Amino acid sequence: MTAVRPGEAILEIRNLTKVFDKDLFKKRQVAINNLSCRFAKGRCTGFLGHNGAGKTTTIRTLFGLLQPTKGEILFKGRKIGTRDKAVIGYMPETNKLPGRLNALEILKHQLNIYAPDKTSRQKSEMVEAKLKEVGLWENRDKLAAKLSKGMGRRLAWAMATIHLPELVILDEPFSGMDPLGRRQMIGWIKGLKDASTSIMLCTHELWSMYHLCDDFHILRQGSLVFSTSEPLGGQDKAPAGIGQRWFLHLSGTNAAALAQLQAKHSLDSYDDHYQDGFLSKLQFATYATAAQWLKAAQESGYVIIKFESSKGMIEERILHFFEGGQG
Amino acid sequence: MNTLRIAWQTFTVLRRDRVFLPALVLGILIIALAQLAGQWGIEEYFKFVYDLGTTGFHTIGAVVAILWGTKMIADSRQEGSLEVELAAPVSRTTWLLGKFFGLCLALVLLGAILILVWQGLLTMYNFPPFEYKSVVIMAMLLMGWFVLAATAVFFAALTSQATALFSCLCMWLAGLVSTPIANVLSPTTPESTRKVVTAIARFWDLSRFNLGSYAFAGTFPSRTELLWIFAYGCFLSGALLGLACIVFSRRDLVA
Image (cartoon, rainbow over all chains, first blue to last red):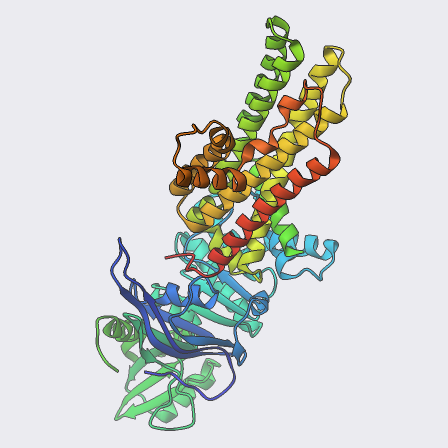
């Protein structure tokens, strides 16, 4: 299966295959099987799959840590090279930090390698700002080996983003973070999205997909089994992403009553409406608007038949692919 | 330039390694003991000091070079920092050379401290400090450390830490005994064996870097001879590093 999508791609994987050859201790294993997919510029693309599906192997091949058996990886239309890595940020699955260096030294070294043209003063300012942003300024002199797992994740995030990359690859960014940390992480990723940074997000936390991803690719046993960015029925337009939706069903209403309700409570407009007799089925893209309508409907005495999100539906759909289902 | 940045980072890491301080203390103790033994010994003081001192200096440095050389690559793999460091815009060759030069810097620091202690103790016994012979002997021993560091990096790039460590220790011992064995081969030794042993001794002879025996001899290698020994050290280090870079750049680094 090939995911192709009109529009500019920052990263393109073409027919990538990675086979770990048989040796004395290991069996021959096909880790990635003829994988082709694209990651659109300025969008957040989820890269999903069960354990061992080939996500991390794909990333490692991208960075040249593994040699591909077949296929190629293009960055901005050219075969990816060492220099291209200067505008890519990488946050690995676990905290892979040099234990005997402190946060300050690690980030300074990172800037020396990724942004050698900046002056020493600029680098120092960037490091200070980043450490303050991730809440590690107080622990800047602590060796990485002595940081807690959550702090290590923050430092890994800082390393991946301090050089203002064009593409950020996040491999399980929420793992090992407490609820507050997760919320902060979501905020940071949203910040990157707002800055039009392209993001490749590998995660098992499906809830994060609703909040963050515009597109997603699903891998199973090294092959792409589903992609939201593949063309539908030959149409030359991209289908909608995987954004979460909220549904509110109200009884005893019609279009006029809804307009009255909206005007009375100065409500934002709903995204979709379907009228079934005296049952109004409303759909919202944001929770805030849905919640406003819910409150207004309750205050006006309308009967709430249903108020739910599409979360469960999407999660079921993704799991369906993990378990071997077809689109 | 990136090679130097990686070298500096490696130097910082090694300086904080738990091996550094014990190695330094042990080195100082051996040198001090050599001086004391020289005082108590029935043999000539100078001979005793140099024999024991240079052997201690060489051993400490060799063990540390092998340990660090294998450990720094293995640690990068184990803690995974290799993955992050190579996800940066640096080639594998740059990374490996940076690691080697960082290791050399750390060895120079260790060697410099030990040389200062050595010279300080000589001064205490009214010997002139920083005498030409003495400095050259130490510098050549340092060159021997670099060769062993390159050997360690070569094996670490090729295999796991345990195998690399074992291989390096074998290579070190082989390098020390190759020439003495070649020199004492019995006339009845088969010609083919003689050829192999001589070839090994010619190519892999670490005893060339130990000039301690010249310290109390009437003669000392000329500048040309010293230059040849230096060139030999550079050749061995370069060859091993070149091979390490070729191997390292062509294989999968993480499973």
